[in-house]
Length: 258
Ligand code: 6PG
Image 1 (spheres, rainbow, N blue to C red):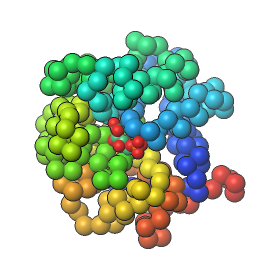
Image 2 (tube, rainbow, N blue to C red; image 1 turned 90 degrees about the vertical axis):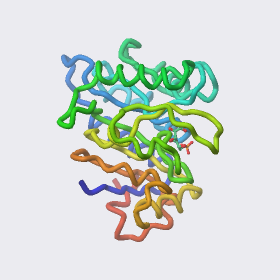
Image 3 (cartoon, rainbow, N blue to C red; image 1 turned 120 degrees about the vertical axis):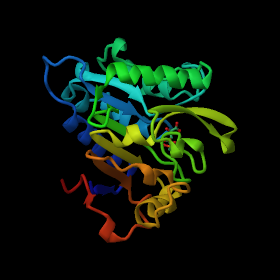
Image 4 (tube, helix red, strand yellow; image 1 turned 90 degrees about the horizontal axis):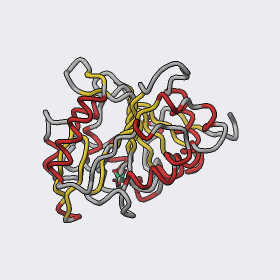
């Protein structure tokens, strides 16, 4: 399915566009139980989105009890560690919206990496709808991208890039000298909707290489994200989009004009 590329003037507008997208996708069905599965990304970019979602109009617009929360990747640290993606989401979002903690499924970064990966695979198979290709299917996956075009913890040159069967792996990242727990390309591509949030000039070359460069997923892992039947939306600021040709941009969103 073709991807949509939305370019916003500022990082703040990226967060607004992402919050609008998020609230449009989350079903407003007060009677529905916890049925909308969302995998959150880590890093720093999502912090602004998370905080925006805790404020009105988004906080009251979104029907939080219908959401079940997962992660796209996690560092191999305890949940209270400053590097923990779970901790960042908890502090900036989950502690401020009415989501039942029983509907929050973190990757257990404190465990031995392979054990954590195996346990999370089990969680996904138990908690998610199993799609056509026998893979757990997220309703929405939020991703970021590093300047090296990695996404989740799928880093250039790492073994997880070639994974075609498992849904979660412990991925050794040589340049970081650490394991990371990460969703794999098959489960990312089984999702109903995938959204990349990318901000900053330091991402511009990676954005251009991933979207307009030759296919080289070993070098640009974000190129692996291509949902089989789901939607793929890139929401970025002008800085991150600065090297893109205009034909690649679907829409230049400006909240001042909206
Ligand atoms: C992580 C993320 C990772 C992140 C990118 C971008 O655990 O770090 O999941 O994939 O999305 O590294 O990070 P920033 O948003 O901090 O630039």
